[in-house]
Amino acid sequence: MYNIASNRPSNALVTSPNPFFPWSYEPICTEHLQTINDKLCVYTNTSFSNGRGISIFTTPRIAEEVVALAAFQDPFALPKKAINSFSNAWTTTALPGKGIGMLAAHDLQFGDRVTAYTAAFLAHVDEELPTMVREKFFRLAIERLPAQTSKSLYDLATVYGEPSVKAQDVVKANTFELHLGGSNHLAIFPETSRLNHACAPK
Image (cartoon, rainbow, N blue to C red; front, top):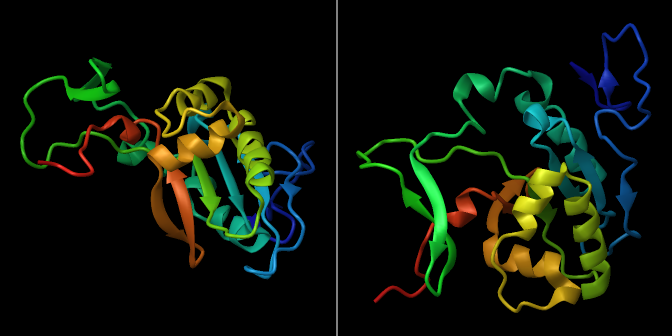
């Protein structure tokens, strides 16, 4: 059980050597934003889900709610549901003119689990930050992740191919929107982003 005020286990007998526990780094924050009446900070846990890691660009209040979730409290919460475990149901390959895509590794039946992964990066939706300031925070969040997870994000498709806004470009091309702490967040699931789809199927 976490003492949310201090972000440390309430029953801990030994003080963690990391003063930012359960985050792996000191959270870096924006100035106060009028549109959300709060600041946004980068929170990263590199050991989350056996080293998959997770970075969240969100408010301090929502970050406190996140660390109270079962996935952070119980090291067995994700494994016992086979979350972040490869299902052997798919493979990725280069598709002519379409980049890297996900293909079924064998015939699938209705109800078969294909993917079940946690997001690697989540970002609170905002309309106030200048583009290059948002880019700075997005890059910090992605680059603080474990190397393999960070690479899996940067290897995803982009819309514009503009290097100066690479992080936001990846988010734009691969994001799913979800509610976290009562607010809209953009989330990237690197594996799920490989699923092929047509925005305007014929």
